[in-house]
Length: 163
Ligand code: HEC
Image 1 (spheres, rainbow, N blue to C red):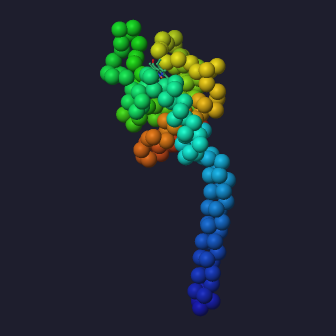
Image 2 (image 1 turned 180 degrees about the vertical axis):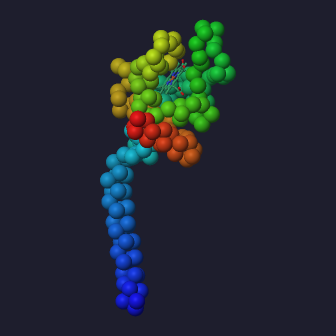
Image 3 (image 1 turned 90 degrees about the vertical axis):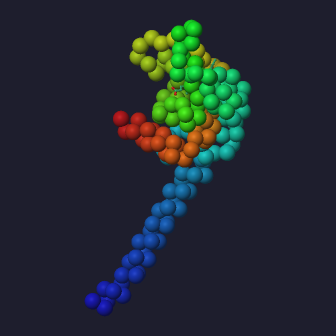
């Protein structure tokens, strides 16, 4: 009995040390490269986010709004029977979608992710923006979301990957 109680702190110490080593190991692998284990976008990489901000201002703000607020009355179809540009902030639904879908939609337009023909005013950016710039602009958009919404979208990414 005495020997067992004497041993307990030693075992606990070893377990704590193992946990610390594991945490340092994981942090080393995931964070220096700005790699987010919860998806493809890298909203915690300041260089990527800065580039994304420039791309957003030049290419997206005209429709999606300088503050990501979208076009007025964005839920109602316009005179052309097409939907206005939705916000990319927390009030919109960009964060309802996994990274992969957002990337494909930006690259090839909304029709590329739908199974029925669809007319949209959202341009396709393949040939206009590089893959890196598309990654950057979507990472910038994600970086503006509140923490709980970012976490929610991380979860959507995990579910999309396990499908
Ligand atoms: C000419 C206006 C216009 C520009 C410029 C534009 N968009 Fe859009 N975007 C739209 C419209 C309109 C929609 C809604 C599409 C629909 O459902 O028909 C949309 C939808 C989207 C969606 C889907 C959002 C969701 O929740 O389903 C994403 C992602 C998106 N745009 C990203 C971008 C990015 C990134 C840029 C800049 C690189 C950009 N857009 C530039 C008009 C625009």
